Image 1 (tube, rainbow, N blue to C red):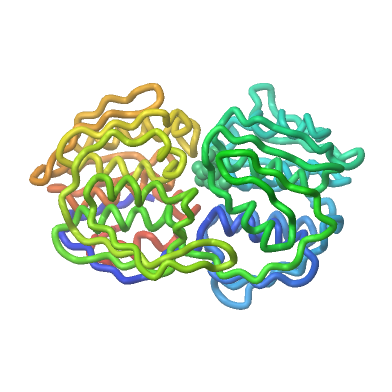
Image 2: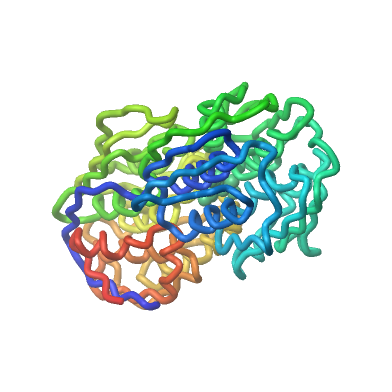
Length: 437
Ligand code: S3P
């Protein structure tokens, strides 16, 4: 699917963005092994989350949807999952595959996790090796990539202390999920702050979690998990595209209600604010342990910055959008310490370097980051023909460049946007940026 995005100077919207993708994955997995019926609202309709839902249904949980975004999950208890009838296809979703590897390696039955071409090229040793140290019998292809073959567990997982080599919430979460089935405490020592959605949800379900993100996080294996009642906050990673679009517009305002602003995840707000964006955060509140707020952004000029290294993991999914902001800023933006971006759905440093160059911006990719020469307040993108490389966030980032473009932006391979936000093109069009398919 190809998009043609028309230049626009106005961005006006007042909406709720889709439910948080990370929290939606966790809600289905943990709801499935809870006792009793979990009631979830705000569940994301993105393809990645639907994969997780389908997998947990195949593993024996009864999951019903009464209306869009509402799920009822009849949990089968920690010991109640049963073998799926075939392969579990995680599509494009790294989070689904890595977290499910943690949950499934502790079960008394075999599972096989497969994914699409992009997911089948992403590194899985980061979860396989620490899970093996807990007693998991899990293997991958020679290069450490999917399919993942998981043999039945021969007994409880072993309690363990893991010192993580990557700053990764997926690895931490996979270990905590295996730790639900351990004979002793599982401890994860992080080398940077990562999102703590798994810990917050486990605590809300009655598990005992110790420590804090970025330090030492411990889980004492629980007897059972209580069912969840959860209204999932809006996804800040989806909101990021509208926040940047709202800042780059000449007219209008973007208002987003009930967006998750968990401080382990809010780097995009910190970075845009440091760049001078006019972002207002109002009515901060909590839902199921998760902080959320209403966000408003108004047009304004941005300045280039050197991005603080400790903000990088807090904004790891938002760099495609942030690099579009950087390209429109006055001066240079420097991103370093972000080599993880090379192993996302695509190599996002390379993909964004190509998008920006095509649109007329000077960039210098680095092994672990990128330097972007901003066009400045009066500068404009040239328009051009770019590729998403099958990565939803690259496609959406290229689309919002239309707010500062003189020419049409043509984007190839846009089906992938449905993995996180099937309604994105419609929302952007209603806000004033026309997208023709
Ligand atoms: C996620 C963690 C991050 C993020 C991903 C979602 C999660 O990945 O990029 O989109 O839900 O735990 P890493 O753990 O690889 O940093």
